[in-house]
Length: 202
Image (cartoon, rainbow, N blue to C red; front, top):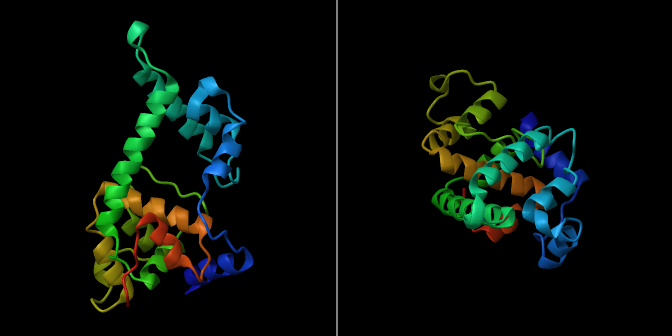
């Protein structure tokens, strides 16, 4: 399958680091931003991983700044931008972590490789309502779910994906990005376990 080859060839020509970001590396990023800007300053002053891939960077930043502005408040009761975005980030990670637990041990290594191969990039485009089932179907040229036999591997995968809610879909897109950013083809399962995400045997 060409999509599997895409993922395998990427990992062979570009081995990824074994560990996730350490506090030391995070501090190196922090020194480039203004303290008053908080985390928005970090985002604004850090170049995208790949500008030709991260084509939504400016749009996301504008949305983020607008959302933070609405939540800082006015007058004596206002709070800093850093507090607002720290709260938002913490709540996001809490929600994603719970959703990720819900789908852990649901997919096999082969099924996860099929999903990874739909978007051969470190940056994925997810929006509310975006479904991994649609992405996988489009990537494999499937127009109708009923075209597949019950025993078909794609049928089994799509059946699982169609049962996911919006937050679980976002968590799945999230973990696929992590995989592209930090795992090699040989240590994929071990890398995913750093995020308490496990692949099903079989």
